[in-house]
Length: 269
Image (cartoon, rainbow, N blue to C red):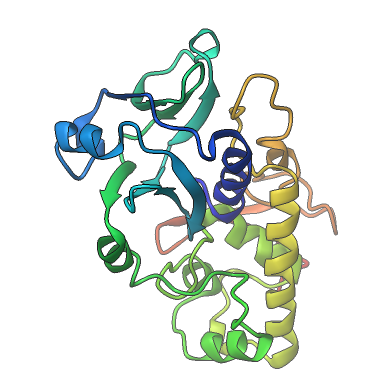
């Protein structure tokens, strides 16, 4: 599932490609991906231009010049592709937005969605999300205080979108590894130094992943060499049995509260 780096990468790339371009055509192949009727959806966005592309947690927000908002959540298996019809991937699309010669293809939205909101509806939809990992108000002290008030494990805490919005299975494991902490640790057991390490690791891992285009393997457009480059840079995620890059011990696969989890039992404590 796309997480903070993937969606922030999409946001940055789409900002330079589709901003202020009117939507010329709307194709809906799966009406269940919408929260309104296909007819209402088409009427609301056809001819509108995208003023800004924003991100909240794992979701993208397309801000239209009609004071309407499109909220995209790719969920598990969802991806995006932008380009002309001749470059279209050999995949089924649920929604297509045409900007003239190029289209934005929404692919794999079997669980994901593209919903239409006004401002108040959007705010209500996003109201239960926790702070962003890079929220200016999320200081190290506040982060540690939040940790000490949380039950469960670091794995379940970092992936709790109501506690902190944007991190999922992949980056929770990578962050814990970078901090040298077991994802099975209780948040309240961390001392100040460990909490600071986790805070610093969160920022460094997410920034590194963003710079590498996240771990989504399919290019966003034809000739895209960046998207998905972080997939080869993961230290522990989906690396069961591989030698740890720090100590050489095999990476362990585990399940924590039904979530798959990868870590090194030797150099994480």
